[in-house]
Amino acid sequence: MLKQNCIDSMYQSETIFPSGLTWRAWLGAGITLAKGQVQQVFATLKMWRNRSGQRRALRDLPNYRLKDIGISRMDAVREAEKPFWRR
Image 1 (cartoon, one colour):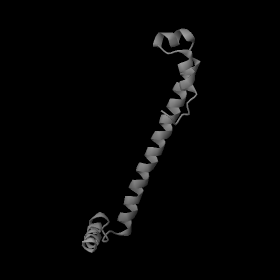
Image 2 (tube, one colour):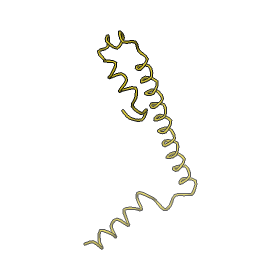
Image 3 (tube, rainbow, N blue to C red):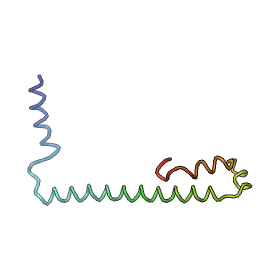
Image 4 (spheres, rainbow, N blue to C red):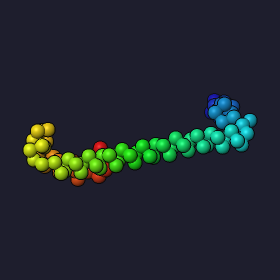
């Protein structure tokens, strides 16, 4: 049974990674994959920058503004001290 599963998976891999593709098709697929990864990196960096700015702004709010939005000074400081990558 194990041997048959190995043989079956060998034939299935042909449909996932067709061997008949040219090097240009492989290169195009690689470039498409890399573009997606780069876009994800930039989106993450943008999110981290925004989060850092929002935490700085929260830290700098006066007490009466914090009271208006229902946050104590201690909560604001605790949030501002979090690293930018942490939610």
